[in-house]
Image 1 (tube, rainbow, N blue to C red):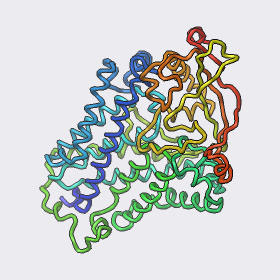
Image 2 (image 1 turned 90 degrees about the vertical axis):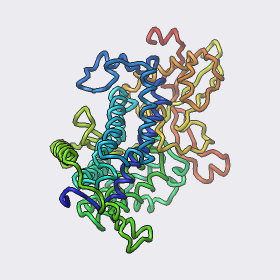
Image 3 (image 1 turned 60 degrees about the horizontal axis):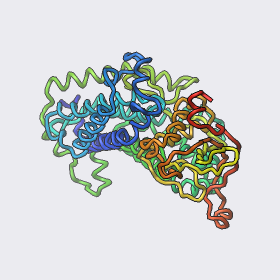
Image 4 (image 1 turned 120 degrees about the horizontal axis):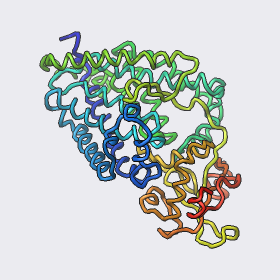
Length: 485
């Protein structure tokens, strides 16, 4: 079935299915390690409270029937095991319904997590993983060639992802248009990485070149995906290099790695053969011997493809709109979404520093800081590389520092957990200055942070310079928090 089978994209299918499955492994590990203290029965934003006030049709999830931390663990481990099997390629060795079923399980389970995850799961890469996982389910198994329509939908996904990110920048902050955005971004991004300071200290003319190159990569190169073959393969290679640059310069969870995997789906087997030095070898030889797909598989793939084409109306309209939405889902199933990032650049970095004391009088107390795993705190510490792992609490601390009052819904309960010395909550942190004992008081201060110059770093050993900006929340104890004070 030449009109249906894409025999020249078997390597692309392997990378897409195994790569997306690998990200699912990471996502479910994150669920197991972070979900309960953030959203569990005794979490900061408990799921049972959410499901009481939000109808299922607005946010479909298995947890509407019943939520318990034990059930959450079962969901997490099921996701890890099924995703790991797909990374190993085991379901792909069977009939085409087997990987479809495996990815379907991952999609349903992770959709159930995201749709009750509230602000802790309000990131664009959650929708990206759900959409990618849904699509690669229909790429079939090794028994059949990958379908053209599903590959085209993956390329359409990458096109929307990159072009949407480019347009939201061009239409948004003027710093992107005058090429000055990277004067600030490496320093003010949500979670700098170990090399972010070095990137920030690059000469400003080079920053302007970086921004211009980003515009080319996101506003021009995606159109190359519309020409399958060497042109699309070259466009994908440029995107991969651009994403690796972002991996080096910051911590953006699995966004960059998943984009790399999806971009690789546009590289045909001939291009892979050339890159790997296998010129003259037919990398699709195995596919030529693949059986014709069963009729049910053709019908299902065409029906799903038609559905995605219909759903594409809303993100396509969003791309051409002057009021483009960033990281928007147009349906509760997170299928065919709108993407984008950093339409506005923060010029100054403000950090919320949480402190506690065991002294009785907060007015004359010695305060100690809680240390977070990823967000800046200790001015001497080299930022860690956590991506593609996602530190959800640390990311929300960045949004909190931007002054969003909505973030207080979880932050005030977080302070209460610190006052209780709640062990699951403390395990989310890098350092508890009280060794598991309860503090008497906690408070939150605001600091302005900037990267130290080379001279400042040589003189002090500090990687950050910070300036006290005053109190955000004055000293509170459990009694005051209970009173709403």
